[in-house]
Every structure is written in structure tokens, then in C-alpha cells.
Length: 385
Length: 131
Ligand SMILES: [Zn+2]
Image 1 (cartoon, rainbow over the protein chains, first blue to last red):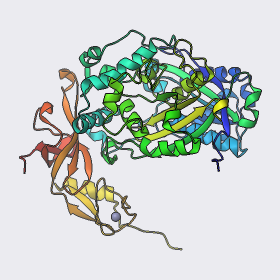
Image 2 (image 1 turned 120 degrees about the vertical axis):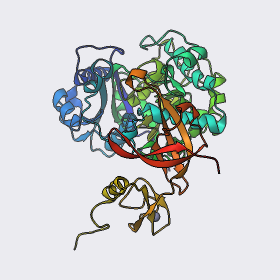
Image 3 (image 1 turned 45 degrees about the vertical axis):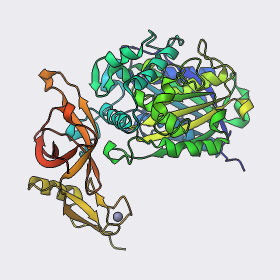
């Protein structure tokens, strides 16, 4: 019997702000702009929303702030934070709330001015200190991901050029996306020769820091056909975590995607071969390699060779991060919702210049913390349900 | 119903820090499953037992992974960050501080000592001889 969440809810609205530098704006204003865009896309207003899902780094009352700011009268209010994967986890929470009738119109929204406003631009208050980690000043999150890359290189022979090819591929996709921030082509040599940040990562192995926002609107599937745009259905979703502090990650080369993805595939009743396009939270180049392995698209240790083959680049057999990803498109501190946004554009056939022809099923992988939490979501067109 | 008291005050965090101030690097050992535990907990994360005692760590470990945090010389220069597998089992984040960061490699044996970072007592490591 099909899982009760399979196909139970759909995305019917999508809003994206401009990406890059949005000076003299607050994170709430950016969030509101994205939300207005998503609701307008669905032919709705804030007055139709009764489920609000938001998050940022450490505004403890962000849900209250956001609902008040937008004028929403919510039956469900959620500002969970499990890192940048949060907004993909919100898709799960929203689908559950919709499927059970607790709410009828769910808005998932994020805005930040991480570039222009720094910590304040992400609504960031005092950092929660992890006393057994922070005292060493590991330059988190970069240091933690760098050690994952170093161990992967040590255990499996993953090379500098293979890491670089992830960034080169993301840039090649970004070049096709008018909205992407970084569109000048780069080479594997450019990545290797860029300024070293935390070995083996240069600045080009690391995601951008941007201003920007995104929002989606979800409804129950029974009414998903009543909106202007073709609905994008949630087919399956799975969540898992392994740790908070990087020293507690059991095997630093195996992420919680290995636990989350089977839950998503089982619920979706699809197999790897059915996936047409994938959107990962590529905070760092190693992420894409780890996720391809842990999703099962290659064996553990073979992710480097897979990305080097060109499979994930434009024209490849496994298109990944077709918007340019956090590495080259946009990264306003938390990127999870942007994976969903690009999946929606691809499945609507709206991804001008970078459309994966005939895309019917898309996989998103949100990553949070220091490879800590992972949420895999599989979406499909009406034909895929 | 009476309160549920699983450990005597002070808590494990304070016990750990007090030992560190006295020059001892102590980790927990679970009476329920025998696992060694770091960082200090109130409940064994391996089996759920609250029967946790203290042992002095041997200080012997192996570098599990490592990076060099790049920093301008005027801000203190580059430094090592590493993950160390203690021979008792737990892994912790720390720094190897007695060698240039380039010489800290995965698989190298290291030994712990108690030093200071930012005026706080912490466990640090130095490179050790193999075997
Ligand atoms: Zn135990």
C-alpha cells in the first residue's frame, strides 16, 4: 500500500528574489518579497495562508516575527532549525500538516542578507557554543567539511582535480542560468590555484555568501490542479542525522543521506534510474561527491571519478545542481529551500536555458550543520504520480 | 514520585573540567556496555545506561583527519585542526601544536597533553613516535 504522504501534497507557488547584493534591506523584507512572489505565482495572498514554516540562524522567535510581519493567521507555525536542510524538512512537516487537514495552505519561506548584513542579515543572535569544539577555533563549518574531504582523499584516493570538477560543473550550469551570481566559466586549475582557506579547500571549493530569498506554497493534492501553474507533487521524503559536532560523526565519509535516502525512495516508489535531475546542498565541493555515493549512484569512494567523468555537468547523464548550486548560483547562509525551488522550475519546464528536457522526477538533498542533518525529497510532475 | 537522580552533583561537565584544571585528562567509561565516552555525558549514548564512571585517558591517539586553517601571519598565522581517535575509542577535535601543520597527517600517532587556548585549559596533542 502506498505511503499516505506519497503524492498527498504539491507545490503550487514559487517565489525567488534577486540574488547577490540587496543593500539596505532586512532579512524580513527579503523573506516577504519571496513570499509575495510565491503567493502571487499561486494566485493567492497572505490571507490564504494558514501554515507558516520559516527558519534562520538563531532568531528564536522568527515564526512569530514572520507571521506578524506578513499578516498571517496561522494554524501551524514552525521555525525548527536543523541547519540548512531545514527548509527541505519543512516540506515534510508541511505535507504532514496538509495531509492531516491541520492546515490548508502552507508557506515555506526564507530570506537573508548574509552578504550585506553579515550576522544581523541572517537574523543571527548569540551563537550557541559547542564547548568541546569551538575552543579550538576550527573555522566551522569550513574546517569540518575540509576534514571530511581530507579523509575521503586519504581513504579512497579522491583527487584535488575531482573536487575541482564539482565546482567547474556547478559553474557550467550557472553560466546557463541568468539568475546565477557567478557565471564566468572556470577550470579545474582555477579551483586548485585559488586562495587556500582550509586544506584541501580553496575559496572556490566553498559556497557563496549572498543576499537572497525563496519561498514555496504547498497545498493538498486534491486542489493542486486549481492553481495557475502545473503542480509539483511530493512523492517521497526522508530525514536523518548523525551528529552535531563533527567529532561525533561515526564515519566522516558516510553522511546521513545513506539513512534518509532509502526512506525517501521507499515512500516515492521510485528507483535511482527514475531520477531525471538532482539538486544538492553543495556547501562545499565534497558534498556533491558524498551525496552521489550515499544516494547510491555509485559505490562509496567512487564519487570523485563519477563527477570527473562529466556525468553531473550540462549534457551529462546525471544532471546535478542545474541552477549552479550554492557554489555558483546563490547561498544566503541557508540553502535548503533553493534546492526545492530549482526542482520546481525543472519539473514545471520553466528552467529557461538550463532545462533538463522531459524532466518528470527530481531529487533534492538538503544538508545541515556540519554534514549533520540530511533530508532527501523526491518530487514529480502530475504524470509521475 | 521522587525526583530522578542519575548522577551526583556536580554534573559530568563540571567533573571533567575540574580534572582538567588539576592536570588530568579523564574520559567516561560505561558500566552498562563498557564503552568509553567523550565528551562527558549524563547518559551513555551507546546503550542508555547512567552507570558512568571516570578513567584517566592514556592520551595515545591517531590522527583520523586533519586540516590547516589558513590565516594571515598578522592574525596568528596558519594552524592545525584535527580529529583524533583515542586508543580507548572516542574521537575528539583538537590541534597538534608542536609541529608545522603540514606535518600533521592522517594515521600519524599523537599524544595528548593539557595546554591552554584563549586562556582556557584544553586537551592538545603533539606528534608521537610510531608504535
Ligand atoms: Zn553504555
